Length: 223
Image 1: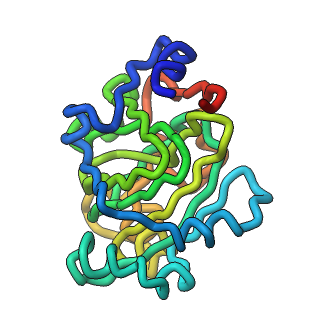
Image 2 (image 1 turned 180 degrees about the vertical axis):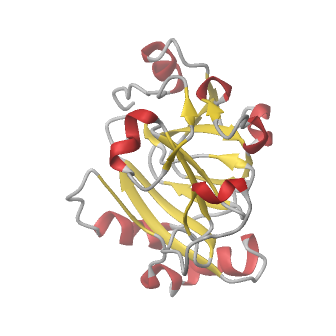
């Protein structure tokens, strides 16, 4: 699959998520397996281009949830949700003041940046790296990693479990009114978002902060 992606996207330097360069952005958790959560996710009716639920009580109550609650999040409150989508381009980047753990059930592509690459209140997308993630991989993205929805690698939609600190990606309790410059990017609780100009109409309340190309991924036929 990776070689097919590289042939279909010669302008992108696509690395495997196991490449040592990924260590700046996150880590892998090969012992995490979520078959019961898979059954739930694939039973969801997919009627939209994409859909995200930050916290799903049916997932939180499964025995598999203990792998997040007791292990990956160190017994501090976390939430487990789900996402499906058909994205093929970057569109925006977000970051949180916590790790985000993803379990990918289908091949996908992550376009990632680093918080310290932001300059003058924005990010040039030429500084971002592209990683192929094979199906059935558990990926942790660090708090300093800029990311957004994964892109499809093949014909199947992105199907993922998403775990974060409790409350992340939910409505703000009140407007942020401090002297911090990053407040203009705070769109939801623990969610700072910068959009590309091409995506601004889809997120009218978000600040435009991406410069350069809106990086796109051409999906390929599954192997």
